[in-house]
Structures are given as structure tokens and as C-alpha cells.
Length: 567
Image (cartoon, rainbow, N blue to C red):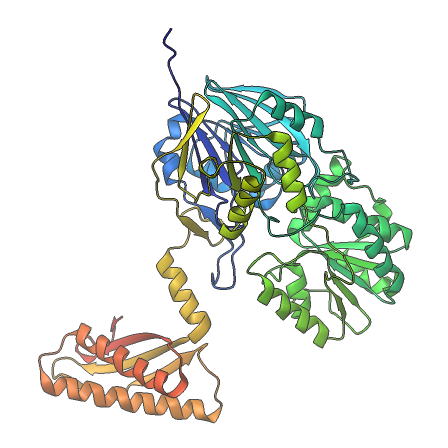
């Protein structure tokens, strides 16, 4: 009897070769589901960028197939791009756990998006039939935010399971991971497993979230003055632990940072955070509180430029200034690429007299929400997948996770280390590699879905690193001559005091010499003038300062009464 096959394409738009931007897709000939829609936070070289999201061009091409977006949990690297996704393509339904549903609704409301998308809550007992292709069920996992789930997708071609973000925490803050369901899926058979690789380079077992509680208590015991604690706004379990300690030590709490305020409000609404109303205070209440009875809980543990902690460190947060005697705690580990930003904030806070405490081997004030190598091995042993695709990690993390699977006996050809845009094809319980499509990044500045082009990013980096030099050229184009010396100005370039005047004066002289030589040699166009200015000024400033500023020539032509400005 002939059975008509319905091959399933598996691919990522984000989340492979990077930490963040998680967006995974399962696509058949008629149906497509998206699992997570996350952002990646920019590193220092992405000047002026708020978020990095995947390009959704491929989803535009197959928009008629999209049946649903399924969210594993409420962290930004899994839900942060939802507003941009639903503004780009038609997503009819979003399925998400309770807390993630609330956070997504808040995002849509904040951005004033008019949408018909339905947001439907699921839990560990939910079973969904999506399109004619996908049967979806869920299993609870432990992570650093409540309501975190793995997803099992059954199709006519085989079973696909993704763990989402997880760790195997045997003494969790909240419900247990459903190891019995994982083991049962392994017994029944898993064709393809996608599993979290973030901690694949860390030996051993990720410490339980409860281990952090003792270290936080010690800090509360020892801090003589105000406590300022920064953590991820989505780390609800950590926030509850900090608030438990605050209540025990009779400290009132001031929440600062928009995302922290939103997360706490949503988590309190559903009972994930419990803290007396009378112990919550506003920034305006700080002068009336004793330092020894004050806790400030804020965003900015990754050194983000616009986050509350950075603005407190630079003295630009209205109503909060760091003073000697304050204790500032970074209750998180550095995301790869954020080390320099964090160090800048730490140094600035220390200069202002604060006692700064970061996570280290002496004092463990952060526990990762991701599995270390022993947990990854246990996960693979329980699921016993036929094929394996590590996800959520930089390339070396994916490779190490794949090597673990091979150590446990999986054949080399059944482990796929993929990149965003690569495809796998599941057909009749067998997987092969498919074609590749372009999976670019989109840089978001504000809420503009069109993003910022690579050229703009390049220009911003030049301005950030080397500044800008503008050169005003006063020209009589009719007679091909200058009518005044060029005027050179620098912005964000260098600060050499009196020597800076010397540089601009000599740059002006160099431009005048170069243009006079140009006018004497041939018929001159505006492009010739601009190219000469750029060449002369860039060579001069690089020779003197070893910097490559952006050069902007401005040509004012007497022929049009100096009103014709040429860029």
C-alpha cells in the first residue's frame, strides 16, 4: 500500500551560532509552526542598536502556511521579537504559558500594535492539533523563570522534541522538571531532539537555584547601608529570593527599570512573586527611608547603556545617586560579549564609593538556568534520540554538545551542527540535510520593524570609534576657485586641547592646497572636490592621530548665493 509522504523541514532563523534570537521552524507542504521569537541583545560594536532580530523574509515567502507561534517561556531571547514578527507576517495564534502570555500582551500593548492574533495559554496537560500536520504536547522543565516548557511535536514522518531552555534542578524554586515524561518519550521514540547548548562547556552539574539563597542572605547580613541588586528582569525566581531576604531583613524595596517593573507586576498578578504591598516603595520615598532598610532592585546587570544600573552609575537616574556605604550586587553572569560593558559599570560604581559584588568562585550569587555537561548527558540518555541537533548556543557550544552525543554512542552522521538558514528534512523517521536559505540579522533601533541597515551600523561605529570631521568649502564654481579658506570642524573625534586647534588649522591649510592644485589641473566637478577633501583630510588626520574619522565635505557655491549646499 502506497503511503503519501509529507516531509517536514526543520530550520532556525535565529539561535544557532549565537546566544539569543531563538526562532525555530517546522514546515510541511501545507503547514508551518514557529517555536519562539526572540531577540539578541547587541554587543558594544552595534552602536545605537536596541535589539537584533532575525530577518523574516523567508516567513514572508511562506506566510500562507503559518499556523501558529508556540512559546517555550517568557525570556526576552524567546519572546522579545514577538511584536516585530506579528507586524511582519500573519500569525493567527500564539500559544504560550501563563506568565509568557501576560508578558507578550504587555509588549503588544506598550507598542500600541493593532492585531487580531489570538493569545492562548497552555500548560503541561495541553494537547494541540495544529493544521493537518502537527500534534503538539508539552512537558514542564526547570529554568530561571516560572512556566518553562519543552515541546513535543508528532507528525506522520516522525517525532521532534525541543527542550527549550532548561536545567535539571532537583531542588527547584517551583515545580519539578517532568523527568517521567521525558523518559516516556525516550521509550516511545524520539526521531529528532533539539536541546539547549548554552552551558555545554561547563563541567559537572549546574547548581540549584536554592544554593544562591544562602549567598544572598549573607549579603543582606553584611551590607551596612543601601543594597542595590541588579539581575535579569525575567529571572522571576531570583527576584522572589531577593524579596524574601528583604522581608526577613526588614528592607523596603524600590523597583526601577521599565522591564523590571513590568515583570514584577505580571509575576505578582499570577502569584509567582509574593511580597507585601506596604514594603514596595517609590523612588520619591528614598529620602525618607533609612539606608539600612532600603533595597533597590533594578535592571542593568549586563552593563546595558540605557538600563537603570548604568544610569545610576553615571548619575543620570533621577532620584538615585550612589554614595559611599552602598552595596551594589550583580546577581547574574556575563552574557558573552558583555564583559567590557559590565566592567565599565563596575569601575564607575567603585569610583563613586560603592562596594560592588559580582558572581565569583568565592561567592556564588548567580545560578545559571541552563544545563551543564552532566545534565546534558542525562538529557540525551533519557530522550535517546535517533538524530540530534544542538541549539541555542555559539558555534563552539553547539559543537561540544554534539561531541557529548557522540561520546554517548550516537553516530557522527546523526548529529547535525547547523547554522541559521540550514535545513533538515524529516521523512519516514529518517533525516537528511536540505537546501540552505539566507538568514540575516535585522538591527532594531526603537520600534521600527524595517531595522537599521548594515551601512548605517558601519557609519555609527566609525562615529563611535573615530568621530566625524566636517569641512566647509566656500567656492566660486564659475571661476573655479575658493573665495575663503576651508573651515574644518570635529565632532566626537579627539580632544587634544590646544593641539586640536592646531590640527584643524593645519587640516584647513592642507585642504586649501589640495583644492588649489585640483583647480589648476583640469575641469572640476563637485565629485572631484568632495573626493579631494576626503582624501586630504583622512590622510592628514590618520598620520597625526591614527584615527579614521568620517569625513563630510560641505560645498557652498557663490554661483547660487551660497545657498546651494553640496554633500
